[in-house]
Length: 435
Image 1: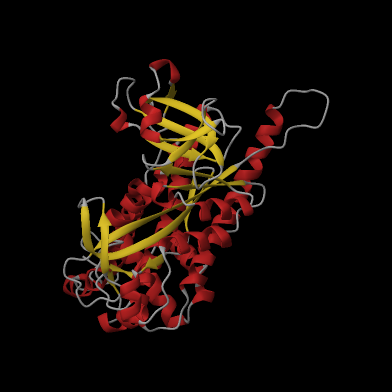
Image 2: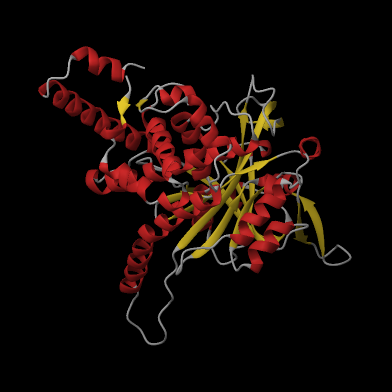
C-alpha cells in the first residue's frame, strides 16, 4: 500500500527542507519522494519499487531523468548533510571538552588540553550486479561476501564518526583502468581516491582526527598525507610486511623481519588481555602484543598483534600499525575497534537502504542513487540519536527505521480516517493507495 506524500512526518519534511538550495522545485519533490520511499520500501529499492510505496503523481521516466540527467550536484547534497552534522555535533564536542576539564585534578601549571577524537574511516565495498551487463562503470571486483571476484561496481566511501554520531561522506565510484579507457574517463586508483578524501577532509573544530583504514590501504602515501594534515592514522597490515627488529649481531644493529616470523617468536608472556570495545554487556577479551618500531615502507609506529585466544596459531593473528606513539594497548584496541563502524555502514546501507539494489544505466545515476541513500542514512542517524536520548539505551539504524515506518503508518491511518469522515468513498481511497 502506498503512502500519500501529505502523510510525510514533520521531522522528515524539516530534514528535506534543508536541501532546497540543492534542487529546483520539481527536483526537490523527487528528492522527498525518494527519501520517503527508501524509508518505507519493503522490497528491492529499484525505481519502480520505490514508486510503489509513495502515492504521488510522478512517472517512472521522470524519476529516471531526475537521477540520470537533471542538473543537480551530489557534492552540494553531501555538503548540506555534513553542515547539519557539524551543527548538531559541535555542542557534543564542547560538552565533552568541558567534562574533561572538570575531571582534571587541581594542580599547578597549565591544564591538559581536552582531546576529542573524530574518526575518519575509509573503505570500499562491491555492489554485485548479476544482470547489469549494460551498466556503465562495471568491472570485476573482489567481494568478501562471495569470496571471489564478481561483476559489479566498487564504492569507495568515507565515514566520519564523532561522539557516537556518524556522517557518511560523498560516495565515489572506483573504475578499473581498462573500464576508464573504454568509457573515456580519467583513471583514479583506490589509493588516489582515498588520498583525495584525506587531503580535502575538514574536521570539526576542537577535535583530533584519527584516520582508520584496512590493510589494503596501508600505503606510505596515505600515511604521509595523514601526517601532513596533522592526523593520526591506524591501518591493518598484511602478514608479509616487514618490521625493524633490534639485533646487535646485525651489521647495522638491526634487521628486517616478517610479521609472521616475529609473531612465531613471541611467548604467552608477551601478550596482555584487553577488552575489545562493543555494544555487548560483556565485551569479548582479546590478547594483544604491542611493539614500537618501524614498518618497512611506512614510518615509525606502534605495531599491534591481536589474537582471540592465547593458544591461537600464528595463522590467526591479526596485525595493525598506528601512528599514535603514546597510546597504551587498551587505547590502541579502541582505535582499531572503531573501524568496524564502516562495515556496519555498508551492511545497513545494503540491507536497509538498498544501496546495491539500483537498476540505473549511467555512472552518474548510480552515484546519485548512492548519494540519496546516504542522505536517508543521515536522517536515520539523526533519528537514532533522538531515540537514544528518549529511550536511554542503544538504538540501531534498523530500530530507527522501524520507528520512522510506525510513524508514517500512523499518519496514513489518520489520513484515511479523515477521508472517510469527509465522505470519500472507500473505493476512491483504495484507488489512490493501491500500488
